[in-house]
Each structure stands twice: as C-alpha cells, then as structure tokens.
Image (cartoon, rainbow, N blue to C red):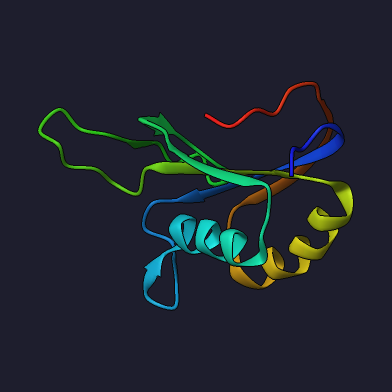
Length: 110
C-alpha cells in the first residue's frame, strides 16, 4: 500500500560498534521494522562525526574504522511510528532518536 500524505520520519543515530543481542544495532533495527511491516527503513554510515562526548569518529584511509556513526531512518504513518517508539527505547541504550512530521507527496516502487 503506498505511503502518501501525513507521515513521520524517525532518525536513530548510533555507532557502528553498538549491538543488540550480538548483532549490529542498526541492522537489528531495520530487521525489527521489516518484521513489524513498517513502510521503510534505511541505514546510512557516516565517514566522520561526533556526538555528546565530542569524541571524533572517522573512517581511516587504510579501511580501518573506529565506531563510525550510523543513521537509521524509518518512515511510516504516525500511528505506526507511535507503536515503534517503545521498541526503539528498549533497543537503543545510547544514541539519539528524533521524530519529524512530514508529508509524503509520492511513493512509487523502485
């Protein structure tokens, strides 16, 4: 079913070394969203960033990395996002979770 009209986006900012039951946290969040039938979820990895502690995390030229920043974005109807938020509260012990209202003007399969 297409997602159009009023919607919300949840952005979850975590580190690549964060885990949930032994798996990468960002991957675990996307898998949970899929199991819940959420409209969509995407993970992007940053090459550099810092958070509350002001410690820089960056990708290195030789391919080594130190806890790179990851952002999980989930978009769905507000009622479905409301169902997801307590689950994220349980899964995300450190990081930032934000919710934004938005309007979807086009949703066509890729």
